[in-house]
Image (tube, rainbow, N blue to C red; front, side, top):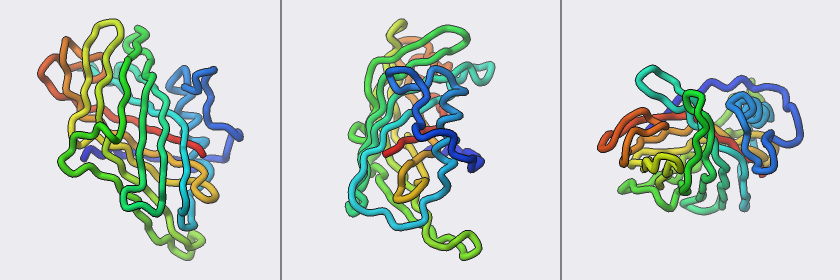
Length: 216
């Protein structure tokens, strides 16, 4: 499993809606996504047990790389469904990825999902951690979910297929788990040329990371 660490400053909630983009509900820039992500985290950790079912809608952002380092970013829409009483509580899809890499707009067809994960034992976990009394007590909740699928560059035809070990991880925020968000890690197998996502070529594997969030 790939884990990409992130540091989140719990900020004051900036608005009642985390999606800052246009009609698609996807942020137009990295800065817009980052603000929306911090907006969700600013609700503070959920401290009560989660129950029932919920649907979370939001975004996933991946920082693209090449030999020179970070090259840009892409974003897509995410939907995650939760049944907190289930032994396998989560399912998720992410699609409509687009962004800018080295000054060039890129877009991708295809959908990533937990149902396409190719791990021999896909991860689908809800975990809880007791909070100390000095922090108000209660328990914090977090999740990890394996994902898979293929994104195809609509201009070049290069295919980016997620390998086993690709995951989305999250912490729950706000009253009754109003929001969720955290780190994403992809291991990517490339076919058909050089990937604008990983900067690697056909027959190679690249690794990239980013963040995601969703709101009920």
